Length: 120
View (cartoon, helix red, strand yellow):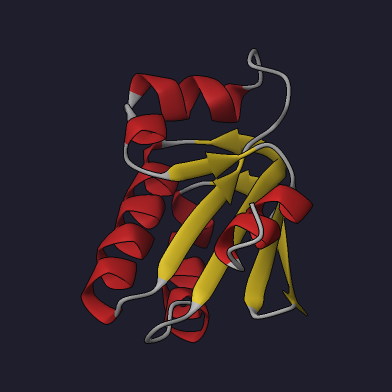
């Protein structure tokens, strides 16, 4: 099976930035769910960058809600970076599922890091 999603991780200040690139669908859901355990840690600060996600189905919604629940349980701050183009499928899915009302959304990684570090 060809998996069409890459993810990378980097630390900026005290925040962990996870960048997803490609498609989030049923075929990648389990792998990402396992990775959530590495990203969402007690009192952590996690920024999930969705700018390069080209497709997301209901599996992506489930994954983001799972991240949100796990973050609440362990006191982790969680933020999203969404594509700047509101017509992108990721933004449409997030709006339709009303996830933009659930998550703290930032326009850029630097703004997310500043907000989580208390500099905004």
